[in-house]
Image 1 (cartoon, rainbow, N blue to C red):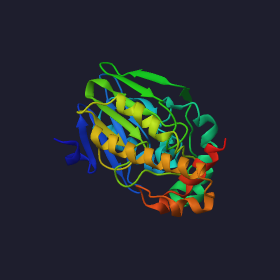
Image 2: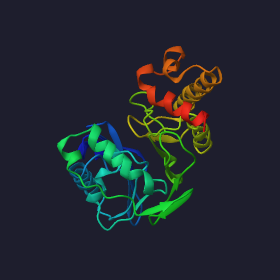
Image 3: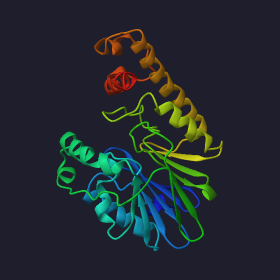
Image 4: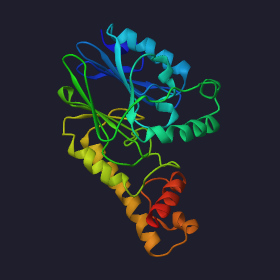
Length: 270
């Protein structure tokens, strides 16, 4: 029986690799099952939602959860961590300093009852470039290739299944999200590194939206590079930051690029 027959919203995208799309926020979680344990990628946006996820994980596999990975600092990917007690919570080392601000921002901007009432549990296991986990018969690698959507974006790679969970470095449910903590001038270079790790048959799971392939990643990378190049050109032309958005020919809707332009101007003058 397919997972979708048991759990609506879940699909098996590769051997023992399950992806669930959750509302609100259309956020993805991944469940990677090995011979001796389970790795969970992103725990949703609140303790209540995390508990729902934990129950779904138990229905997908009878094996214990060995590891939880948070792909970055935004609340919708880790506020559910508390539903996985006594399990290593893994993320990039930048999360040690970024999570406090991300918590305050998430609760302020999304004051839903279950978000605001959550006392989130931060990562307790961090790394700078690469971290790996053995799940019995399966090796999983967590990699930080550079900054983009945030300072601490990581990929989760399952080599034997040819699967990559990309977090919000890639989005397929809408344009990439440029927030107050984005790095628009570096994002394209980071995605160049991402593309070097995926092949034509690799299943790429974005942070939001359905799985995509390498062609999608390359196309979205070109648009993200375009955003960065236009910001650089506008700063070099000494266009005031307040006028820059109106003067660009952007590949994404301009209303979603206010923070990209502001952050790009800041980083150009650093």
